[in-house]
Length: 392
Ligand SMILES: *Cc1c(COP(=O)(O)O)cnc(C)c1O
Image (cartoon, rainbow, N blue to C red; front, side, top):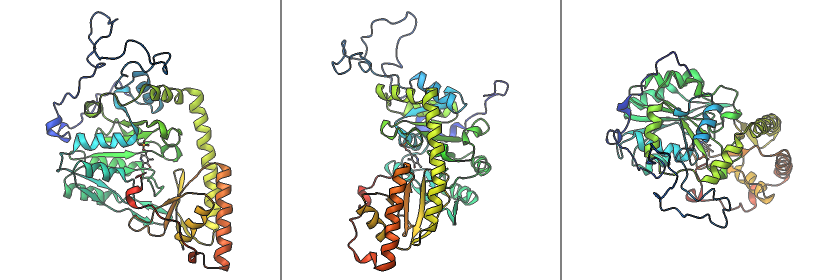
């Protein structure tokens, strides 16, 4: 936060023309009267008494659209200001809000860099906007985003948003900050660059949040779903220029965060919980080193990509047999074979130490079996069809 420097402007031309003056829904909270302090709230058709299941009445009233204490806690966590924070139902909602706020339906495109998180394309498709894919370079043991090709494709395709996941899912690779800065700069008059840092806590690189003040058209997404262990709570955050967060809030549904979720998220951001989360992340990083080493030594595993996240992307000789062995042991990993160029790939989350030990003994057994018989001759477990799969 720099009080001395004037704020750089966000280019209003990037907002959907028909939404520039849109005020959104006026909720019971945002339209609260000012002047005399309100005491008797009869404006939202809420119940006057709590539900017996909600003894202290915490959920009796509609919540704040953007609970100030939570917004402030997130601003503190990422060393930014509350006006740069939008809280919502997971990063998924933030992605959706960005597409809806910036792309004309049926018009402006978004750029993605495959292989990547599926929700960018899903949100674009639901909004009727074209998806331009600039595939990443498979530079084993890493993946690289060709930011110059991205800039060119965004220009040619008239894109309004570039989605980069860093660390990427399923690649596990980061996009260097200086490349993010350069790309954002190069497209500043045309497109917003969204850096999805769902796995940021596991990466060595600094957060792109540190670039926000210099780059008004940069957006950073964070979540409580991964390192903070609250996937079920559905809390995601967009960090952006105050003019853009104002638009996103107006486009968002009136009461995105249920009261119990806000309370849970606030507890997760209290110092003791944050410290425990930090320790847990440290444990995952140590385990990642160990698991990476023994995965690389497995005979049937051809490639283990370097990971800056809490998972490994691997290529194997016989993914079907490996899935079968793991399935028989009750272990589920993510089949990535539906993605182009990944027809031999699986993604394995770093779980607990005991879970990783189970994984290892199942894989060692698979190696033994492959040495004696053809494991592929046993019937394979059914594969989920693409429609049954969540995009995560
Ligand atoms: C898991 C994941 C998310 C998290 O989404 P939420 O809606 O916050 O749970 C976002 N982006 C990527 C790349 C992910 O892998």
